[in-house]
Image (cartoon, rainbow, N blue to C red):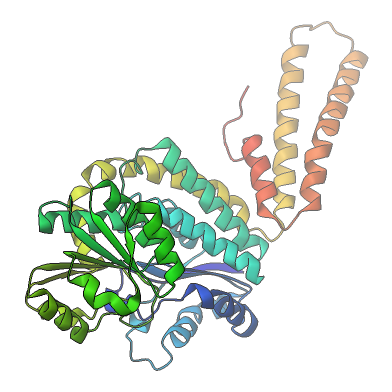
Length: 423
């Protein structure tokens, strides 16, 4: 079996392609069950965010591994006209696990060290578990990735003041308008990203308006922050009283067309309007940027802006990568083993016998005149003690031979992957 990470990200595909490959949350379980039930894969997880759509899967044999990307391309872009296939990339086994570790840790994010990706990674893991598409190997790799991410965040400063794309969006609006105090901002969409932006906007003194097709969510968010909920049908009127539109819905097609924006500007008398579109797929027709008075920026544009402000976080990158490398070594020691218990039991008994023999020889050397029968009794006694001490761990290993996490825990506790014996 081989573990494969395949998909496309902001590194490999422009926004126009990424938005065609989005897997909506409501469809994720169906996609996973299709991949495992009809595509011959043993296990599957999908992580679909604004900057990546990736599948972490287990291929039952190497001959099928080469088919993972073509099969994903056919699923994501059935007509073949979206250029998805040429932007898909795949990593296998060690490279795949290393990639998962870096993604969960925020080391592969557009905003280096961003915190949101870990929550999204956990949610993808949970969805696959609920869909019944996880085997022990992929489940182990996902759990290890979360553990590595927590280490990176606690042991380095890469996540401090790392911000998020919603913060970058607000910085752009602040830069465009010269400040946000008293500025009218209309949030189109009341989901997680909008809520994050809304709370920061509120602390900046902006006047908040919120609209959403799910009217209750807009009302709740507006009430929480002292803003005003706007019915979708009253959008034209609301736009006349704001300077910023921040769009973040989960719609699969634009919610603001070129005609909509032209109508807004006619009603507003052509006054400048800053539109920040942080949705994937995009909420605003890119052609709207041509309308007089409109400043439009999307995720790729925001990403280009934040790159110039990452120097401090990049200094923490080597330390974070060292954590990933160390954890990768111990993880790969067991993840590729069909029976993770056998090699670990052998390594554990070898380590214990080596330590026992060394300590016995060291102690007996202090009493050179000791009778041979007593020496033999000491040898038997220490062997018996070691055997009894190892009985519990070995039994635990044998009870879960296909779960790599049990073997890895014991390898770490007993330093079984440390080549140097410790005295």
